[in-house]
Length: 152
Image (tube, rainbow, N blue to C red):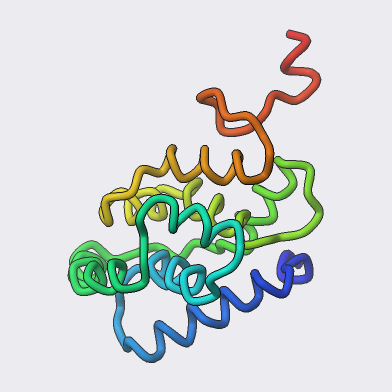
């Protein structure tokens, strides 16, 4: 079960996101609440990446009514961001799920990318920022090449 790999900060992000959603009482995309949790936690690598992109909780709140309306019109498929985050962690050679992996998971899903673009953030720029914060190069590929890919 992927939830067993969550760091305390990542668990806190999920808790804060759920609480924010409950307080807001809206049907807006769950991606917005994951971002709200990241912003409310306020210290992880994902928060640093979102902040570097100019995202604040206040700015996100201004987008929630629009996202809510679109979500009701189009519907939104449930995405298991914890499972996706575990996949993202493994791609990076990590055996834990941190806030950075949650944000990378959001960026790897179609619905997550849509929400990020809708609130006027650049998904590739966010991904590059996360990888830079992790000390990894970003050269237009989502992840560093594996040994086998470098040798090909």
